[in-house]
Image (cartoon, rainbow, N blue to C red; front, side, top):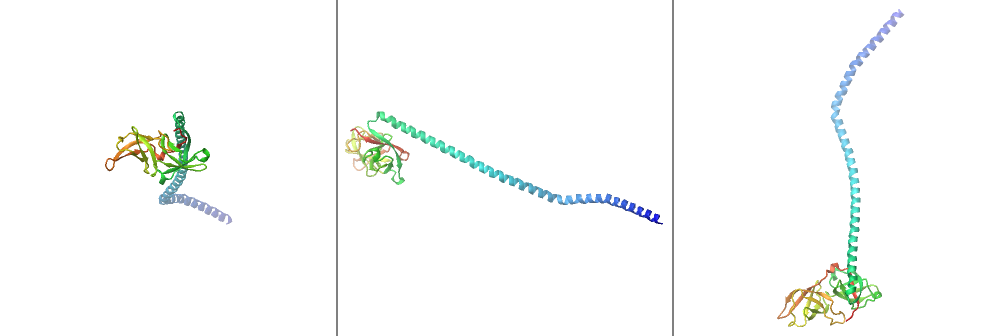
Length: 268
């Protein structure tokens, strides 16, 4: 009796195992089908999440790359700016050396003793009135010494301090310089607070000047020696009656003035 019960139990276990195997076999297909179905449902969502994640990653990398490019670009700009400044400085040094060489060459043909200085200060509102130079009493500079830019008369020393001086320009409105134009036409040069000077002949009957006539200092002065170049006639203006006045254009660009010459000893 007991043996029969054991046999039945064994058969039941076998049946259960066989049933489980059948269930597992069919359940696997159902499970795979379900998984595939879920994948079909969730694939678009997964795809969008993946795409967004990838895009975010690329955007982050682009931001990092952009920052790197900005930093590199700024470095390149700084390098180019420094190079440009160096080149500009070198050009200015070459121009200054060339100007100083020309001034030194003047010593051989110039009959006046002079000192070379630099314009240290000039106000825009006084562009045609005065400027400061870096030569003063310590360098032997005295009041009324003539001042030239290149070989053209530009003014005279008006005030002298220890290590600098103030130069009054011939373009100053109260400036008067005795001058000689053309074939010994005597007259005076007046300032006009501009790049133009006015030449007024002493005798209107002797004056027959034309544009291009050169004008020099006459030497009839306690300040300016004879023969300093002032400029040339650029325009002839008729005034009342037979009176005329001649316009001279300053032969220098005031904005470009740098080194100047102060005549320290003048042979008359």
